Image (cartoon, rainbow, N blue to C red; front, side):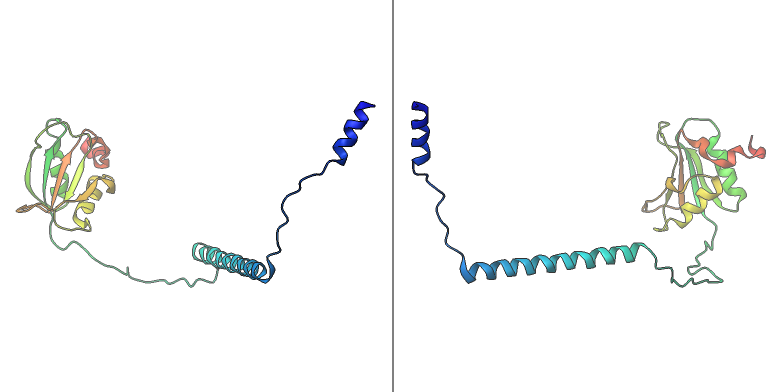
Length: 182
């Protein structure tokens, strides 16, 4: 019985409830309306951005193909390229072999010799004259070297258009694999 009485006491005891909140009235409803409207506007803005992105990166299929009989930009190297080939890998005679290849293509050697050291890990072609690297890219193409080996670096007082510094990776030059060069 004691248990029942204690339970009865518990049940009959007053409970404290959370404080009653006053209704926000018109001010709260106006706030909720503006927040809802703002979220709808942001959502619509996001949809427009996504649609714009999709349209830009995916064609509609109605694009007009323009064919041009001549290249839009035509720029040729008018003069012979003056160059220097420097041995930075330490293999005897390799600079002369590269210089001969360029000379056979009609370009003018200014210097063929050794670089400051023989520890160059990669072959570098410095275009000394054209910031768009046209001369250096032409030399890279003739030697069969990748375009990534060409960088623009002006040199005050330089008498050459292109400097080729041969590194330990000189074997990348595809002209070396031609039958006449083996």
